[in-house]
Length: 486
Ligand code: NAP
Image (cartoon, rainbow, N blue to C red; front, side, top):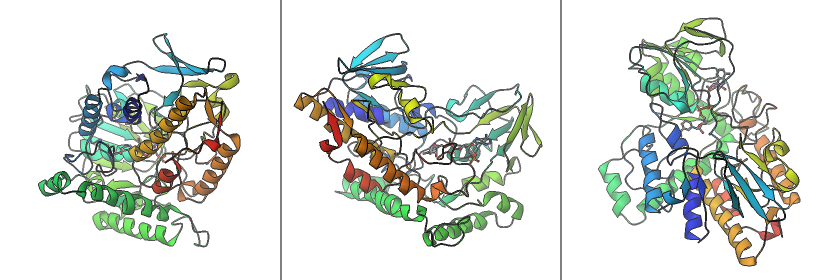
């Protein structure tokens, strides 16, 4: 998504460029995640490029094939395909200080030389499968590597993990499988959204297409009340009593509303209620869009929810953390991604051979999420500190980032400069302010035991704590006083 956008903007600005893409086609996460039920959970009329608005989304939250087709259409319309090295993986990149260039190593054995490198690899790219003792003898795969050759009809399926992904998979396969056991370690909060699986009706589509400014207004309604205003509920109010259930008045309001949404559906089943009402503050983990399909799936006679971790695998099943064995023909790992191992497995070597991931250790950071001292002309999209936990479209963030990056490149080219990198004091100041802000948000809450937002030390480095409008303002024009330019 962000790489395609970068290519379009580089092309428009007249910069020669090459895109290196490990997959055989466009879409990134929307190419790889083909699991049943995959759909975006950000309103699609905001989750699209502002310069390529789609007035023909068939659903408010489109499914994966429609999203992938959107990116394909944009790629074709802009003639980007000819610039892409498909099925080619970048292994790393090394800065040559004397030449002022990057040498980019490909898995084909070739090296590309470039004045600047933009990483657009995302944060949800490397699947995470926990190391569990034992071995399962049947088919087993991660949701981002869904094996469509495995027919689930009538099979006993154990799915480990149910965050945003498992939450979509379970309702989509429940009526096909023989049985489904969902092993979900931590319950998830859900946001009631009746439009989640709804088609965009002909009236709305007509208005989006023909009424002047209606599409922009519709987009703004998702952006402002839906995203930036909602951030307030994620902020911790230190004066708000015990913090294990909620962290502020606004957050408690969300807790009551979300709890009512659950009990309104399954209140007659106290055993299930006890399993599905989270025991931590709302929005501390990513809140999921819901129209009731999750709890409807869980109440089917062939579906069971296990509130536990995984202890071990056996050839014919999975033993949960309480020692109960769940027989399985197929095991699905809906266990997420290695978010905190940012840029893994790339080896980015800057000045003096400094390795970026070694420099970061467990604390990845970048000035405005994009640049790092010692790594001249290296830019990241969807880098550290730019993921959106509360709500917001990563496409919006990518648009802010690429505008900023292209202006940096233009400055280099127009000024005849060799290299640009952020001043260490600016970088440290940004990191300090972002960390202070993140510590005041519910995502850092010690009352959530497991959270992919946190690193092993319980610190949050992947997320942005800022409003979208603030990030937009700060990235609108680079301030070249923030950089060392040579
Ligand atoms: P995730 O939110 O990280 O969920 C992983 C699940 O696996 C959780 O239930 C987690 O339990 C469980 N798990 C991890 N390690 C485990 C272990 N050792 N033992 C037992 N359970 C374990 O991953 P995801 O669902 O793939 O979602 C990741 C992100 O992808 C989302 O936050 C979102 O940004 C994006 N996404 C978006 C969409 C969309 O737009 N529609 C759809 C899917 C994903 P704990 O909760 O206890 O850690």
